[in-house]
Image (tube, rainbow, N blue to C red):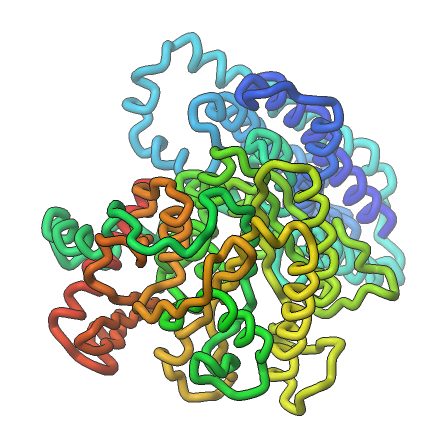
Length: 614
């Protein structure tokens, strides 16, 4: 039993120290020039502090086999532990050596971490190495062998120092019984280190901390990124193909005009400060002014009446990961996967915070929960947010800070947001903030008790917090030059309820703030993906790279329609009606119409082709 514990601890420490003392310094020294700016010692400390989680994960992976081998050796003394582990160490050392050097060398050319895309070159090794001088190829392999040899030597040492602890003769009965239980416990600990204890398993975004991509990539263990990428295959290329490329383009491009002249000015200024509030799950049913129940969100209704309400806005999809990209990048949601999972594609997506940043805006994203879930932190950084504020940055363990399953509740977060806005405004210059709520999410355990229905009560809680926030904000100097855009990420569908997709997809979109000229209702059918182009149009900025976002107030928006995707299906709505189409059945579930089906199919083909190229 003691031998199992000792070998596990020694092997885990050896693997972790290899990444800390060999892999990370090597990657940093070779590639630091790609950072584009001077790296401070504090940045390096953060690289190690945030990145060690992914190092622990790989150390846990490679330690699992030694645990099992040690358990068998403790039970069966005839097993030659040194021989078995020498073979294992050689295989693992070779793999880690190759990954270390390949990631370090290729990063200079690719600017992203080693992933499964590198495996494609192994299919044609002759062509892959044709443009590389022989001496560079040989040097790379020698470096990989050297790196692997270092790991091999350290791993062999771990075995050698723990081998004397194992029993030489037949073990005692209590050891035969206790050793498997100890091994299972150790494997459980390794599993927890790999998966984490949070609601969702770890993903590479757990190490992301900086707006400088290189620092995030430096922190991320290359073996972990490679293993994770094996679980996220490219699910875009060649999907939903029904037309030739030319025909598909001829159908889709006229549907999404990227130019035009804004015909209606909603704002007093071209350069307001911008606060984007993304309200979790706030669908039509909670908003009376959109046809929903009375008394759930009276403050939102009041704010909409005082500002500009886009009363016929549709969500692009059914989950936060799609909705977030739809709002910020003006990018359509995908029915079979989510582009946010493919971190190396994210910098290639358009994003209006990045456009504002180019115009001198300071950019911040705020959320009361964990931004590492669903790669949200990766996306927010890639989309141009310089600073992220989330649960680890908040005093969530204080008794006076209300927390729930997902993090700090929105009432407290709105108060914190107000303080941040005052500071940003006092600092001068333009700023933009993205705030994502979380309290109106199951299990709906909010610090509020006004409505009997717990779901309605949670939305009423957020609504009251929002109303208090807006009313207080009006009394500050920040209000005069502020545009507040309030939009839902998607609607809410009660478990077991019959899905009404049109009601589910119908969400609020409201402009308010001192920068808004006058109250108005815009009843043109639109999508949350149109927020990006419409907002940039109001600021006099181009938006031609937002290929799925339309300025709904421009003269080019002559064919209003909406496109909403759900799990392997889509809903296409225009003035002729609505078609709900099931991709698996390859038939309309509701509202069959050849022309609407044709356009919806073409949009999906165009969307997936575009993602595959990014």
